Image (tube, rainbow, N blue to C red; front, top):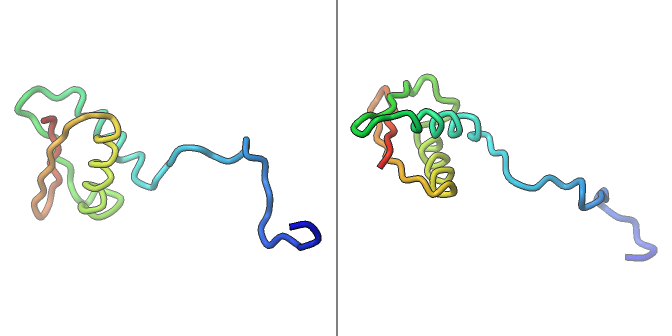
Length: 87
């Protein structure tokens, strides 16, 4: 690319962030943290109105995060609540 103007800015590789901090990271981390204290047969009951996004997107993010951690969780939902439990 000598002699040609760059279209994009350049940065050092060491300053490039690694890892992903998606928009659901906070809520999924809170849910997974709360699951740690549950006894067998218990589930978290989370009001859908308290979620920062749709239940579909939160369930997807929770599934990705739990799989990444090697943790098996179950989910269900009705018109008002998202339920999450340890499998």
